[in-house]
Length: 361
Image (tube, rainbow, N blue to C red; front, side, top):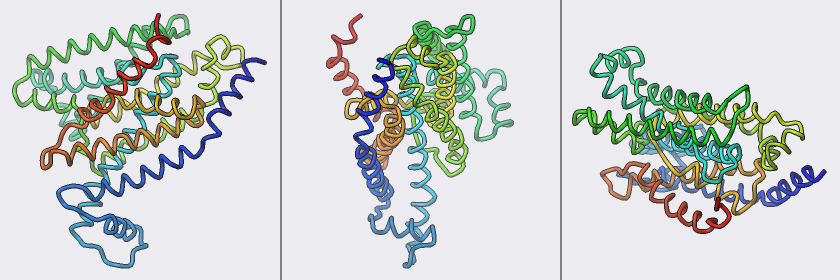
């Protein structure tokens, strides 16, 4: 009875604030229009809207051809790419924090990012010694690096999950420690590959680990979309179970939740979503850590709000970071992972100071 009352309180505390979702969505739309017009070719918001309306058959005036090409072929796929990756990172982070019951958990904690970096490093550096790079490019073409990143992230996650599972039960604390160990091991492998790399390989590896959306096009967007949409749907369908899990594993079990199955489903889905994004864009940190905290601070822990809110706010954060990355030092472009770290690290430090007594072991 107490557990059910607690769930109702969690739901009521968040569902009273639907205006937050509307506000985030409106800011995101405005930011997208500004971002579409910013760059080497300046395009006013009115011209941006004219091109977009014309592309769906609603425009009256004929837009400038150069503006149409820049918007539809370069900037719009890049922003769509940022929307997908930002949403997947933030939603995965929100769910993993609930599964681990640890406010410091994010997708990097389960080895996705470090595993993906190892896959790319092995393909770029070690593969060249054995012809593996040429084979990968012959088989996967331009997808060799994204595929290597995706498979590396998935493999690292599966290892972490296997180490934490015994007799069909998954221990969250063991998973956390296994993730730390795998991240350390992957870091050592990346360091070894960096030592063995030549100048060109080292530059490629360094730029990939810093994160970038510069490789975005409609092909990459369409390839990434199924991973993100399926992941969002699966995690959304488990929103109520994640609310129950907030009460503790024993309470969730007594309320009819298959806790181990829930943990497997959430971790694997998060790994697929994030691994696909990291494979294409490189390592982008702090989005999965910062965004869920902001949502919970302003509107509570109800996952029926936190998950869509994280998707919108994560997308907004990454679009804003990309706008800064490609305009602040134009014509050069700063890696987007650097921007998200500069934005996220101060928030993380503030969070630690604010909650240091609450998290003391």
